[in-house]
Image (cartoon, rainbow, N blue to C red):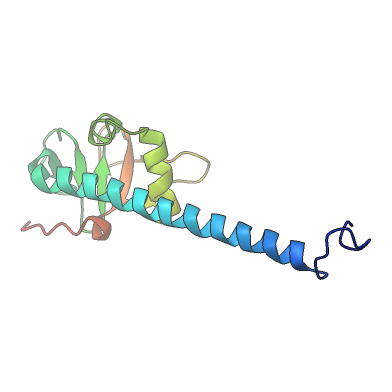
Length: 141
C-alpha cells in the first residue's frame, strides 16, 4: 500500500519479490539443516547396528530372544529402548520424525512412528523399523 501511494519509492512488486526471496532462503536453509540432521541420525544408527549386528535376531531364523531387535533383508526393527540409547543425546521421537520425513521409517496407519511386529514375533512388540538399505549393512546370513 505504501508503494502504491508513492511513499517508498519502490517499483510495484519489489516488496513482494523481496518477501518471496527471503522465504525461499529460509526454506532452503531449513531443508539443508534437516538433511544434515537426518544424515547424522542415520550415521549413529548405522554405526550402532553394524557394530552390534549379533544383537538383532534374523526374522524367520533361529529362535532366540533378541537384545536390541530383529532384522530381515529389507528392515532393521529396533526396540524403543535401543532406539533411545542410540539417540541418547537427541530426542528419540524427533529422530523418528526425521527418519519418517526422509522415507526411511516403516510405520502403520495412524500417527504412530512405531511399527507393530508380525505374529511370528512373540508378544508382537512395537519397534522402530528402519529401511536396511539406508544403513548399508552387509550381512553374511
